[in-house]
Image (cartoon, one colour):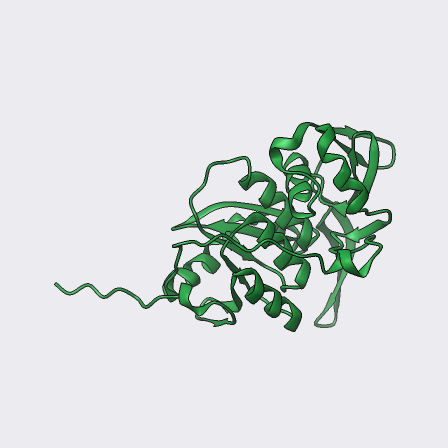
Length: 266
């Protein structure tokens, strides 16, 4: 299924009217079904859906990758059904982590039916020797635009990347949560070094929860975090860097992971 298509439109500017088309991203209903029962419906970009299945299952506390027996994407008349089959002992988590409502584009907490579930306890990010210099943070931000073909074509997609002395992987989606889940699903099935998550979006508490579930120690974003997201990152052991631009950024939590540049004296 294609990720974008041209749509006719008129342009207005400088006293002139023009005709033409603009490529726009596809937004498809994607059901996530576990052991034959639909758990969530998200509006998403129809790409990297196996990654989405693995990542969503992990970051929503439903199943670890080794508990997933198979994933199959089935096209239906109304959208795509991602059919995930779990080992029997993982099914109990489905009842506890319910999502019974259809969510809009990558809705982070839609469908959760209790306040406790919305603010669920997170595992602490494991202690890590991973550190970054300011120039490496700027390099991580600079690396992501080159891995955003959907955004380049449409100007309407989010991206999530993983950086470790270079961009290791990136995923795109019309929804910021979906992009992060797709990246998570790729990372948990691919050997990779320690590194940082890089986002093109703002940082809300659900994004911090997903990064904590993935166990990544550094989160970098181009937009601002919410106050609660900062609190959560501090509690989870995540270094949160936000408002990152090509020449500057702001550091909010666990400042010890940002180290001085090493000077080389001849």
